[in-house]
Structure formats: C-alpha cells, structure tokens
Image (cartoon, rainbow, N blue to C red; front, side, top):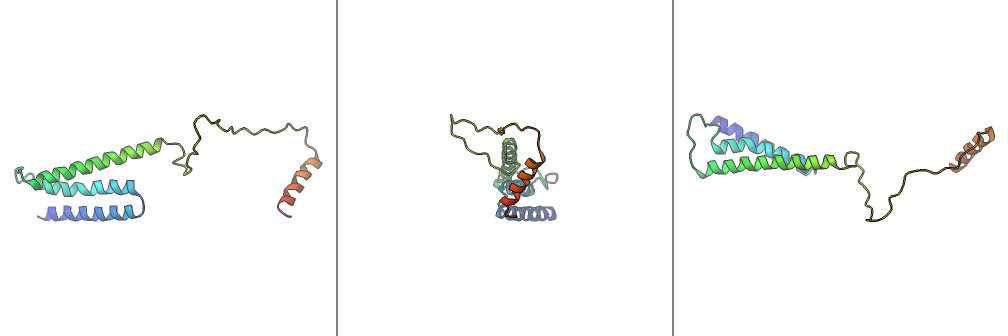
Length: 138
C-alpha cells in the first residue's frame, strides 16, 4: 500500500514537472519527462509493485497499466527519434535557420573578388584610416 502511494506521488510530481516544462515551450523535453513519470504509475496499475506477493490477475486496471507503460515507451522512442532528426539538420545547433533557395536558382558564391594590390605605401595606409574615420564621423 505504501509503495503504491509513493509511486503514484512520484508520477504526479513528474507530470507536474512535465507540464511546467511544456509551459516553457520545451515540448520535446516535456514529452520525455512525462514518459518517465508514467512508468511508476504503469507499474502500480499493472500490479508489478506487488507482483511477488500476488499473481497476475486479468482485471481491466492491470491491462490499462500495460497500456500506460506502452504509451510511455512510445513517447520515449518518438522523442529520441525527433531529437536524432534535429541533430542531423544543418544550422539548428547554431540557432540560424537555413535560407530557402528556389529550385534551379543559382547558388550564391561566397568568394570575394578584390583587385590585386601593389606594394602598400604609407600614404595608402593613412588614406584607408582617414576613410574609416570619416565614415564614423570622426
């Protein structure tokens, strides 16, 4: 009786944490927390907590408990699959989203073309510095 109460309380606390996590817009983490929180409840409902003392009975609550355990397992698998798919996308980790390019459009190159310079002179260097200062209004 005490073990069932503790397992139910742990499940309720875990589902509360999952709700708070979902409120913070972290749905993948919330689904994973909910899946872990449902495991003790499923174990209580299946009678696995008192499995040693009693034999498995064919009550609807026991089979509903197996259903809860299956739902928790499916949640865990689906969140891991989504996480693996996100890890493979370029630009997701850095926070920048990739730009859409129309099919058949030329891909812009990143090469910078510059005219070749001759040996730098002191006047040329000061001219660049003066241009920068003027640009900033100094």
